[in-house]
Image 1 (tube, rainbow, N blue to C red):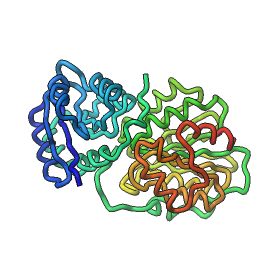
Image 2 (image 1 turned 90 degrees about the vertical axis):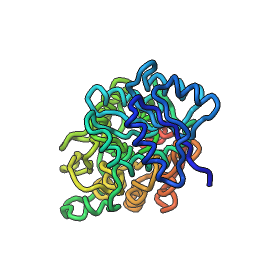
Image 3 (image 1 turned 180 degrees about the vertical axis):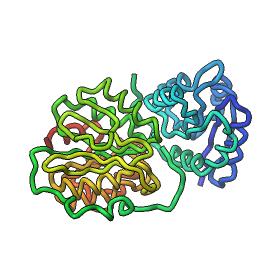
Image 4 (image 1 turned 135 degrees about the vertical axis):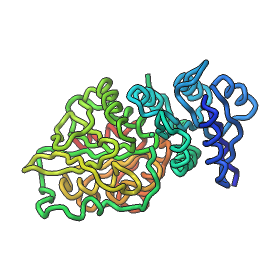
Length: 358
């Protein structure tokens, strides 16, 4: 098989060296060039275009966001952002996600060399995922990975649930549960901006690291008719509100009488993610049953497939985004294979499914 051809763009010689060393240990990856800023990179790319780009944000002559927007508008290419998690940096990286970045590797301001060596598996996984991404389906507007670990199932969070955590046969309020990963920041924007102010309550897991989800929710809130915010423990799920699971925390649906609330809690990585789509979906299956609509969208891997199947078995309606409009068709594909999907639709029709269900 052809190797994944990578270009590294970072103004730090140390970072370029460590990323190169980490990637070139892999038989399926080849680093074709490393550049200290986007101007040098663009010159090299005229004669040799990479399959994947790893990109810093703060660089001389041209910043990474400007470069990313230029690349995505002229020659869409999978880009993995390597950026600091400082507050300002987090906002900048959110701009990168909105501009079309596929994945994020977060790095500290201090001890970067050691961090990148420790995060080698994350980096390699991000590059391989990016290489499979259909970036022409990314919708840039005006991604994430976690460390490899034993692949726990949602039983790690749900096995000890109280016997009272069961679904009512019918409630006056419906629940929309959405799970997504790679390409999901843009896909969620497409869906949520199409919804009117009055629609069923929505709970969302988007694979993102800690500190990014609050900024992501704030940005969506500023452009949507519905209220969008990062979920807090015991938040009520109500019509016209979408709750985004916080990065680094699991989110589960609970029932308080006939009302729905969310429980936001720590726990192990599930399907190597926290938050996990499976944790959310399986809790929705148990608590809401047929009073819910489950939607699985673009993303790498199989997180959410089992949970959506359980929602289907509990009587919920289930929808998967189609392959043609996914950036990565992994999660929807696995859900379809398990037989838990009632309907497969393109991204632009997902909002219509929500409104039809309502």
